[in-house]
Image: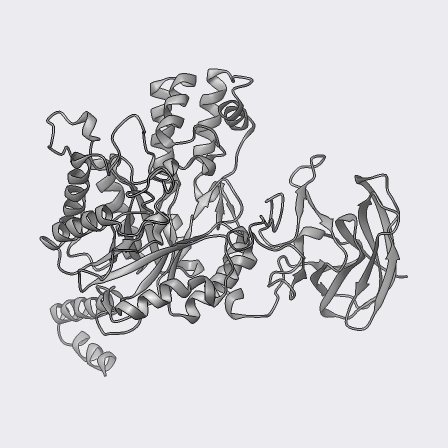
Length: 594
């Protein structure tokens, strides 16, 4: 009907055509616009009362660098890393590095990619010092100097989220003075008063949230205000409970959050207020009941089992107070763990934000690459040995900041698959095309994508140390892929990897696309330091076993051949079984029998 009317108008009046075009455009924009979210009982809903499940990522490392994200593990608070870089290469060069880092780390291309992969929300970990001066540097004590940079960065991010119809959660990750004794999280300088030891810091934090709320009060793409990230402070027993895990009342934390809420509501009645408990977000003793009708409880979850018991505490709290909950931070584990966690959360109607989108590591969607000069910098920062030249520090840090751009980084599609497909599908799919013809080589690390027990089987798949007391590893070397399979880099060749620490009973599956059917021989590049290792190859209609010789070491490679492997035209599943472990596997090469 609308199209018919539009055609008639086109024949009569150019002005009416223009008006009709604008009307259609407006209707289209309205249909794609985000609506304000709100708490409705135990659910987060949109303006129509429809349940909204937030699926997001935290932009850790952008405004606030935690040392481990940069391979710095000693004296690794952001302000100290900056001071140490200034000592190595100078003030101007260090400023150039940080300006480049902030410009490159998160851009519209990152948010576009997140939307394409399946995310519908972004959590922004904010460092207060990009928005206002520390109290120690205020020209007039008790007043607030506002800094444009942080607000501009937030405005830009919001614009990118709008363009992708995504929600943005503002998270104060580093509060004035620092909100806990886990120092890296909030970039806390212990030479100055903490948030809890300074009324001036508290008032600055309250003023900052009022400023943010006033700026974004009419922005429906803002999902909510996560007003304090992971407070971890012992109020009653700071000697024995410095991180507040056993805190019974949490009175100072509750008061501050109530005061912040009051300041926000003076200017913004619409947005959700998100609160976090003490002890890294999970200790709600004394904090509840909620004091605002539009409030969501956040909790954080790391390195424990993904069973119903692991979220029982927050489910019970949700039911008791009839308030929505949201997992504001989780991840940094294997694909197996991510898949389990997301399946558990969504079964219980709990939205989530993984951590982080990118860092120098492989258990997140985007990995920032290092370089030789930067490796020398981090080696010196961590050990104090082999001080690098000033020019090498400059080139190494700037190159690393350039690698922070998405187009220069490594995208881990296996992690993305584990987040969005594997929680809801037991099927495997090819990691690479694996088109087999005579002489084709397939790398062992390019086994199929999918769950453990479906695409591969490994005996150590994730880190559950909070539940077990014992650290698991998954992929122990943490390179190339993030499954349970152990993978190491081949130092003798560029960009080459192999499967190692293969144990009895483990297996890898490869989906092969075969153009010419027939009987194939498969040459496998192996290394072993035992005398009884054995593997077998298995397809839908054939199976063959081969003993693996002791090659003289786990990096001394030798080729063994398994014959009479029948492959049909089209898609084939080939499984490599470790009948007896104790070997490494580099590649498989296929030869069509004469």
